[in-house]
Image (tube, rainbow, N blue to C red; front, side, top):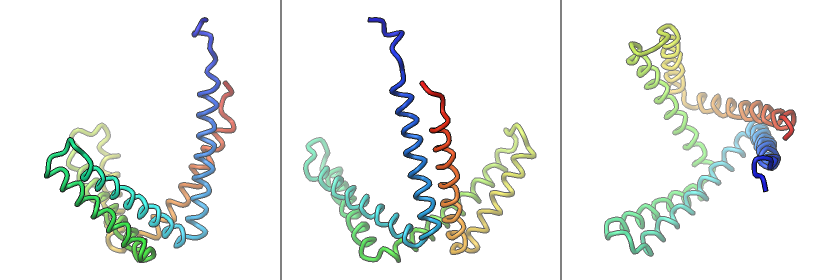
Length: 184
């Protein structure tokens, strides 16, 4: 049997199917974010809470049942597991408040990262291939970061809307790529 003539249609079809499914899911999530922003944020917080609880159970189980860990590692895993479970249960007990906190926390983190990224770009200006583009990037990054930090609530709303629009646009483009992609 000659493996050089074996068709590769299955991987190509699988990739196109993955693009199609991923694209449709992104469009669906994007529509949900724009149409029901609060419900989508609460649902996302619920997913994160489930993840935290499951991760906590896994960490605690590793700490309890692992024979390879020393006493410190076992205690650390159990404590980390308990913290994850407590955080997940707390998030479930007040999903809306947890969603609001998560949105503000992420907005502040993005703002801080953009400010630091802008200053970092300026500090590395000497190694830059395009000094003008680097300076423009740095200025815009610092301004965007301070804008988010000056009004985290509006920044969270902006980022949430941007996420919804980006999911719809990028998801639709993936659907188009999947449909118009080359046949194997």
